[in-house]
Structures are given as C-alpha cells and as structure tokens.
Length: 220
Image (cartoon, rainbow, N blue to C red; front, side, top):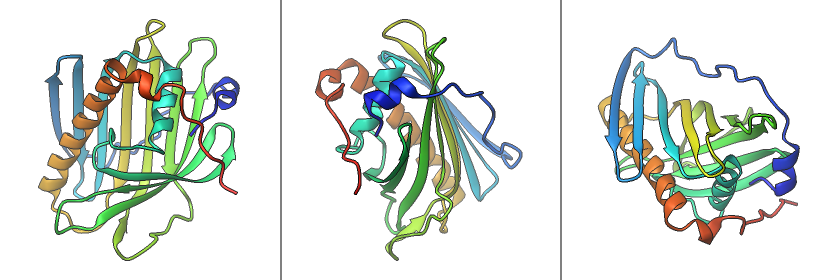
C-alpha cells in the first residue's frame, strides 16, 4: 500500500484521540498469553457501535509493519475474516483509499468497508501512526454486502529496538445490519485476538516471504 518513498517522506503528526469513547457502555476484556507475546484485547459497545482496543509487543520494526500491511493486497488471510483488500485510489504518497471485504457467519451478509488510510512517521522517535477513517462518499457496491459505517481507527507502532516494537490498535465502527450484540462481542474478541496472533506468526516465522517484496500497482 505504501512505497519506500512514501515511508521516507511521511510527515510527523500529533497523536490525538480519534475515537468516540463516550458511547461505550458495556465492555469485554480478555488477555491471552500465547507462545510469542501477551495479547491484550478489549471490546466496548453501546449496542450499535463497537470499539476495539488491542495491544502487544511484536518482532517487527515500524517499516516492516508497513510492508506487512502492503502484503494484504495480495493475501489478507492474516487479517481475521478478511476476504479481500483492494486499492481504489492513491491520493498521496502516504495515503490509500481501500475497499475491504469481511466474511460474516451464516446467515448474515458479508461486510464491506471503504476507508482512507494515512500513515505518519515521527523521524526523531521512529514512531509510526496509521489513521483509518471512512471514505466520505462510501457506498455499498452490491446488495450482497452490508456497509461498515462511522469507521475510525488507529494503529500505533513504537520502536523499542531495531527489530521489536510496541503495537497498539484502537478501532470504532458501526457494523450495520442486525447481528445480535452478544455474537458481535464474541466475534470481535476472537477475530482481533486471531489477527494479532497472526501478526506474531508473520513476524516470527515467514517474514522473508513478504518483507520488501511487494510494490502495489497504482490504479489508472
């Protein structure tokens, strides 16, 4: 999604809270110790809108994490429930407009998401922020999908050493449709934990397969 030149030229940004936490009334939190690192995940909800927070340490540098995100264009299977990720537009070197499809359990429709993804690197600290927001004119592409709305999210990657970083994610969205709240809580908890565990696997087992080997095609 982001080229080497975009990584090098990304501007420093102020780290501000982009999520609406006032709507979160109920929460579920789970900490799981896997063989690589502790994965801390919490889910908050008011019954319509859901917020996810997750945190762990990972054997990736901020730049390597950008390459991992790049690889999702070809294979997004490390993102739980992800069917496909497509670049729709490239407004700037450090920005991408993406269309993402997520599978949903039967009998519910799959979810479609259109987002603007912007990354910023603090060249003094090496910290990477990736802000994700809903594309303003987002529309569902067909009746087989339900549009994810009011999407706001942020990845934060803080380098600890040259090869290890602290990774945090906060996301807020309305998933649309009529999926029962108890089922959504369970699905979000499991899928977030699985995604973070898959990031650990990518970082520790097959980094050589994707690191630096992907250059996205620019839409015409």
